[in-house]
Length: 227
Image (spheres, rainbow, N blue to C red):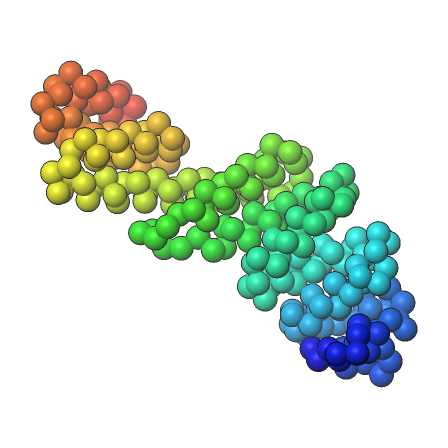
């Protein structure tokens, strides 16, 4: 997009007339056309212009949520998150509020890196997904959010197990035990829990903590005897 230095009134977006001469619906239609053509960045720009020129209108409301979607489709997660959050701030009780929160959560979830890297994004995804489940339990996004929440928990649990096994192999048994306990206490619903208990037994035995090892082994036997 080329913006003239003389001011916003000269912005045409490739149109015959300055964009200010178009109605909110006309701009929205232009945005939709670009969206259908998979020109996501251009679509987001059009949707944003509706908010600028016709603030607090119904078209601006629609445009804002579609801007968040367009940015997400273009993999511009920060701007998608910003638009979604702005929608939630302006229209917290609107019909699309649940979808805005879902897009916000996706802006984190879709950035979760491979296990072994910093998982700060995964933690933020968990928080955003939890809001969907708690605040919009009857929305169509609630069940999907639960699935993604569980998968994100699995990502974090796998990270903790990876670090714990590293400490165990290096003989840092206290540090290893602490990591395995995190999995057992904070991520007990994941499939990493049985191994975490098993490795915790190993760590405790290596530290000479027989009673603690027996307790962890008893939990493993009682709850995960088929593993």
